[in-house]
Every structure is written in structure tokens, then in C-alpha cells.
Length: 388
Image (cartoon, rainbow, N blue to C red; front, side):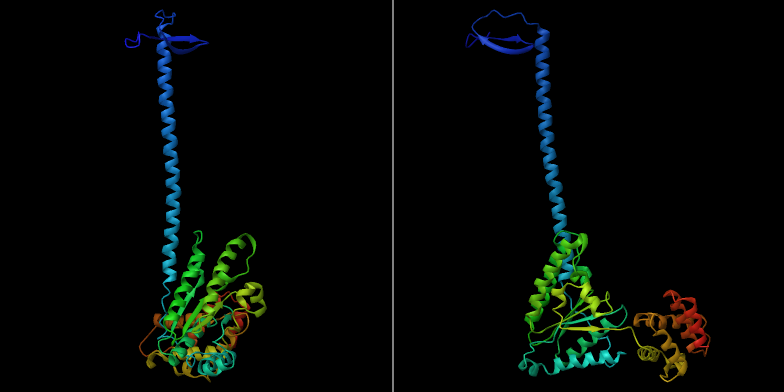
């Protein structure tokens, strides 16, 4: 009985459901106390279960939100960290690189050198004739032909005419980022910083060298078409800003093509058309190999090098270089450096006082490289016979 309102509150059972009722009637229907206890326990249990489920749902929602938050944060931070490495755009020091005169360039490449020199030396005249800036140059050919060395020599030449000019070399493979939007951001940020550098130094030349350009300029095909298109669009946008900056000289290189027709198949048309000059860089000729070997042996102390290795007219040296420059042998400048180092190493292994490096040492180093390059046994035997 409620003492204040004079009402009685008692449970009423109907259809196995117990409810509570209040009225002035003090007579209570017969309900077993065990049923009331069971009802109260079930009610309390249901309340606790509901509370647990609610807490679980809340915790799960918080956890999911936290997971997505962490993923988003890590994605942005990782992309930003990678972009910072790329977008810093540090100028390359070419002071120790070779000049055009020091390089063993082919006749075809020397013609390209003269064209570039004309653009640099006759800039004022060419502007009057409607040529606003040095055209973009795309170098293509097999790895090891000397594309990078050519760019470094070009930079040194331009620096001699425009002191303070800089080279920004970007291997665009590093633009690619596994995080969403990262690759596009890397492209835009890098180009943006190069343009800023050029605008801040209008009296100097900025050489932009995009190595492995096919990694961002390849025609979009297959499952990566959408991703490639996004990167290419970012590249085109950034590239337009570069083209509109008159003191930037644009160069690029790819190892994925050895013919101009192959470039057409490989690279996106809109990007390819932004390069007015396309220069094929072949693997070294025999004359280039001879000059390269002699230049390297000249750097060693005279007491260790036989005169035959310093003589461009030596018949054995000519035969050796003629053979390694033949089609199918694929001996690049990089391979030639490897051969030179192997020659020194083998000489050092068996060195005795008074010994000198000979062509026989060089020949053995070539044979070692031939095995690495998978020359057919018949070719190796023919090489041995030619130099016997």
C-alpha cells in the first residue's frame, strides 16, 4: 500500500505476462512470489543485456572510427613523408662528371651536341626567329648507352655559359606511391619546386632531367589504366607549367625503346609530343670503347700499365673493341667500366713486383663479362680465336 496516495501496487498476471497495477483496491489477486521473483530477475537480466549490447555497439563504433582514422592518418603521413623526399628537388653536383670533349661520343651524338650548343650560344638570335627556348629532348636506347653522362656533360656546358645554372635529376620511378593520391602529389610537388627555382633565378638555366619517364608517361593499358591516367594527368598539368617557364631546359630518358617507332607505342602521345627532339643513343661503337678504355687506364700509375693499353692504334686492342661492339653482344659503357674494374682486380690477385696490366688481362676480363652476358659458346670461342 502506498501510504501517501492510499493506492495499492500489485502484480497482475495475464497470458503468462506479469504487469504491475495500482488502484485503491487493497485486495490482491493470488500471484505466487516465485513468479514475481522470476519476473524481477528476468527484467534485471534483460536490462543488463541491453546495456551490454549498447556498450558493445558503442565500443565497436569507436573502434571502427579509430581504425579508419589511423589508416587515413598513416596514408596521408606516409604519402607526405615520401613526397617530401621527392619534392625537395636537390640539385645534382656535376663538377666531377665528364665534359662533351671527355666523353666517347658517336658522330651522331656529336651532331646533337652541336645543335644544343647552337641553342645555348645563339639564344638571342633564335628568339628573334621565333624559338623561345631550347626544345625538350627525349633520349632513348638500351641501358648503358651513356644517356645520363650526356645530360651531365650538357649541364656542365650550360654552366660554363650561364654560371649558377642547376640540374634537377628525377628518377620518376620514385614518383610512384602505393598510397592513394600519393603519386600525383609527388609529381606536382616536384615540378612545382623546380618551377619556383627557375622563376627565382631567371638569369640562370635550370635543366630538368626526367629519367625513366616511361614510368609516368606510358600509355594506359590493362588494369592499371585508371591509375596511370591519374598520374599522367598530374604529370601533364605540371609539365605545362614547366613548358611555360622559359629558362627551364627539359630532358628525359627511357631505356624501354631502341627505335622511335617503339616510343610511339610506349609513351602517351600528348606527353611524347612535348619533346621536340628525340635522340637515339646507341650502344658504344668500337672507337668509343677504345677511347673509354684508354681514358680509364691513363688514370692509373704508369708503372702498372703496359703501353699497348694506351695505344689507340694497337691491333689487338682494336680487335677486342671491335668484337665487343658487335650487334648482339650488348656491351654498354656500364659493362665496359665493369670490365675495367675486373681487369684491375685480377691483376692485383696475381701481382708481382714489376708486373704490368696487359691486354691479356683485359681479354680475360672481357671473357668473364661475356659469361655474365650469356654470350653463346660459339661467340666466346670466336672471340678467343680472334685475339689469339
